[in-house]
Image 1 (cartoon, rainbow, N blue to C red):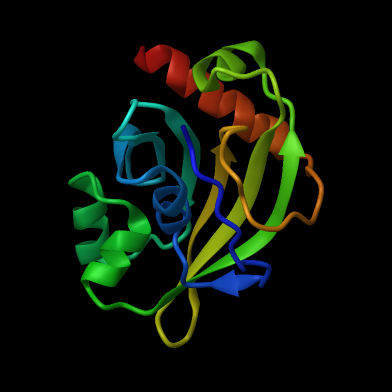
Image 2 (cartoon, rainbow, N blue to C red):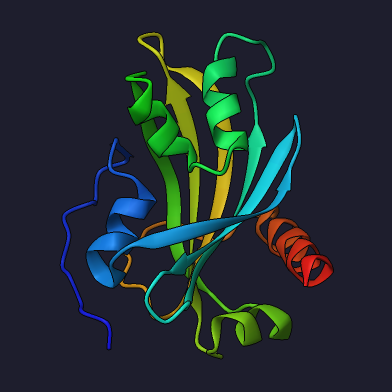
Length: 173
């Protein structure tokens, strides 16, 4: 059903989007916005074919001024963050802090359709030529996603973020 792709993504900084990785493995994807306000955003990403849940992510915006308001407006319209930066031709990079396997609470296992460990990716997004901090993101990928590279371990905030995503997901259903 899913094709496995081996990707080179072991660098700490990249402009390759998570949606690029997902679409290489599963074809076209769509996002569903679960929460979006000035401070945070939570989305889920599904494969268009089969409607399989591939990712849950929680964004904490660090950039509070209006310098990137055009990006925020496009994001609010339902576009992914990376695609919004690309669309506006604004330089950005994903600084991956860690990538590791982690067991999820039962409601998230059920949502992903698997009791196997999920891949957790912790990312900081920097933008512009000065590489200004824009957002911190925790991304939870289905056990069916072949995420390239693994390093790091869960930190004290991991379970807090996972619990927040569990609460957002269950309250939106």
